[in-house]
Length: 127
Ligand SMILES: C[C@H](O)[C@H](O)[C@H]1CNC2=NC(N)=NC(=O)C2=N1
Image 1 (cartoon, rainbow, N blue to C red):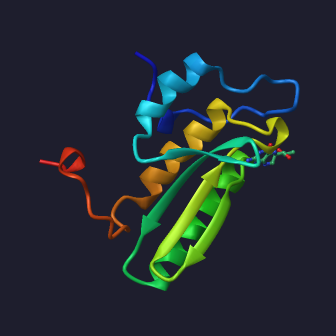
Image 2 (cartoon, rainbow, N blue to C red; image 1 turned 180 degrees about the vertical axis):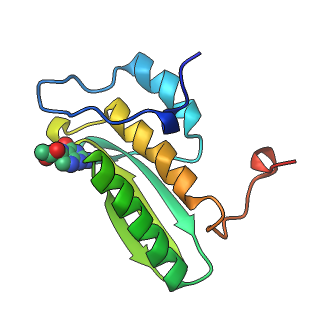
């Protein structure tokens, strides 16, 4: 069993490193079930929208994600709106997805814990 994504750290990534294989994506995606894989101008990206009760909380979360990004030297696109933050991860150097993006998505989920006003699906509710 692989270690949880939140306990892993990003590796420095250059254009020489291959993007995540289909098998790797199939292994990693279930660990971040609330994220979508979208395609922007042919570049696959991980995206999730988080909901908050006001702008201040959304901005606080944005800054938390910014701190995470600086710590790992892997940076997302962040769109902060009233009560809402859209986070998008991909690896610019590869024009695609790398394990680093899945690690950061999992860490982003952890950073959001206790801050969001997302309505949780029953399958994700804690006992
Ligand atoms: C030198 C520095 O580590 C690189 O330019 C990093 C910075 N942050 C990055 N962030 C993301 N998302 N993709 C990259 O390829 C990337 N490269």
